[in-house]
Length: 164
Image (cartoon, rainbow, N blue to C red; front, side, top):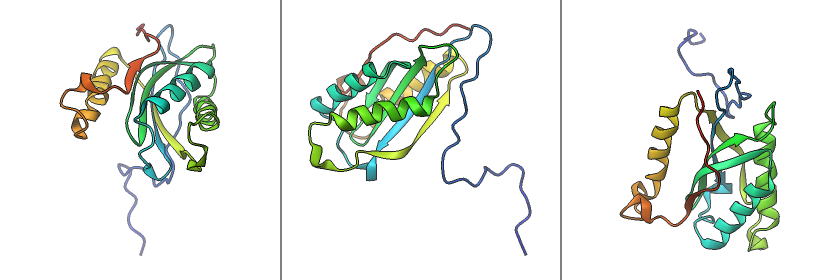
């Protein structure tokens, strides 16, 4: 006999839901994105990888990257669209992932990125601040540094302003 339907249960899916950006009057669109390396290999937390990722984000001009943290096996970043209406976020992520893979310092690594990524649109300025506080503490929680500010693989390419 099948289990009863539970309307409060999360959907049974193997891939994250990627919802289009929601535009609400003149409110800012700020997306929070997480991208992991294939098989969670620790390839990213080094100066060469940091430079390649920054160059890839600058080359992929549909979105501008604000704050980011590069961990050994994944990247967290905040971004905002540069076009109206916004271009497809998933296509933009694919674009910069491809750029980074083509310019990677060690071409023998094979596939660099996991296929899927995780994203969510922030809804309020306090969500942005809270999410950044959590994300920038990742290296400390992982035991990589004693203070979050000591982690060298983080930064801000563009100041993303919240307009409500």
